[in-house]
Length: 70
Image 1 (cartoon, rainbow, N blue to C red):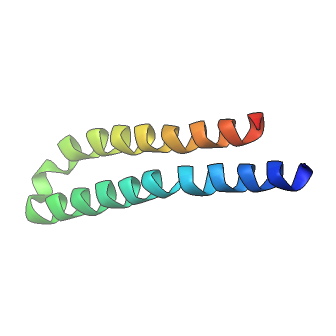
Image 2 (image 1 turned 60 degrees about the horizontal axis):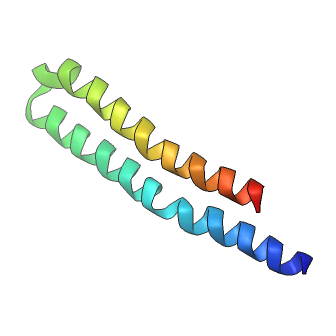
């Protein structure tokens, strides 16, 4: 019974962190691309980039909370 619980915890955090990791990578990539195209807009791009990364990271934290509650 304990082995199934451990497997459920591992799968929930593993699968639950795939999409946020991809999302954070894409956000960072597109932000750097936008800054490379228009360096003067770096200040306007930075704050929305950080907000997007924070929201994506929150999803990974939800997966961690679910893993702890199992």
